[in-house]
Length: 518
Image (cartoon, rainbow, N blue to C red; front, side):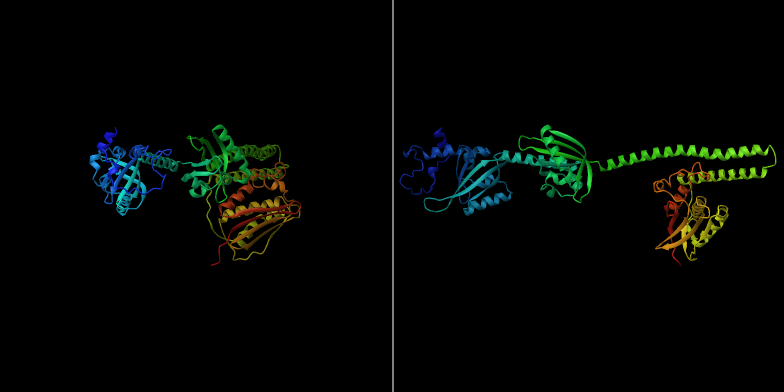
């Protein structure tokens, strides 16, 4: 074997490499004080058995190479000896030029070098260039030591492809994905996580997971972290995430431990359920409203049947009495007329309420003089006020005040409020009508000196068919007047409100748009 090596590969002894003088006892290849025990070339062959060694001159021509140098690229020694090292290099590549510059200049160099095999395939090596002194003192030889790293480069390329594929999957995910180490520090985040939290990826990867939850939930988060480590996975519904702007969003969190044989991590997938929870809340509210509406309809049917039955009984009863004689006929006819008007009012309220709720009521906005509409309403209510011994006063209103409203609907609202103020007033009480300008609005007040409304009843005031305990009283009504008045006011772009104090009185007010002069 030694002879075969000498036959096919050059000997280092044939190269004029300078042997520096050494101090006594400093033999390079002495073993336990026995100089000459090892042949330097045999030792070099043993050392370089797994490493490619080449020596070139300053022009890059190969003067020496070992067996490993040939095996690395599938070359025969005869194909390379005396040839330029450039034969092993591709035509392109920045690292090639740097390597070649070190050969020519005699400078040390270390780096990854792309080469080609005897079959023209790509070969990667970890290459080191070291200048060698010659015996004549000239610096003309270059030692090239190489190790094949093609497999390593392919593994790195595969890892890069895998990383790119992993990153693409992360970025395409519709849910936020966070990777957390065993201590709770974030090490990875996808695009959706950035959008959900409001932080950039670089910011997230310098944060602890506790920074993404409100302070009162950090203990629960640590408990979740421990449970995931113990069980390997965990699903949490109704978690809360703290965003960068301080807002809170609801998330469902799926956590699992990732163990690839190296450091372990916890992957958290966060699904934003804020919109779903909001819709669920809206559905619950809609169901409650539907149930309330159903109860209101049942109450409506009960009360309407009662309200209709009372005047109908009166009409039928007095009609029967009219058949019996003439003595009290005039009084009976008055009762029949009153019951008839009461029925007509109830039916009218029902029709108006139905048109409003179904959107069938048309509103025609225009300019309405405040003083004129209030005077008209006062004149219409004056007979009822005299009958009830209630004084009805219209406060001074400037003639130039114009309101944007539907005239007939506004009159309907004012008459409803005014007649209530008269009917529910005390004997010798008073009702006042007024209008004042406040900024770009006109406020109309209808105030009375009646018994007032208790605070606990105020919230029921505008509920359909609600008469605040007056169902069995002497004053008849459908319980729809105030509901209709508020809805009509809102349809005209206004607001209807109320103030009341028991024993003092009640004041209803309307805010409507003021039409500027000119």
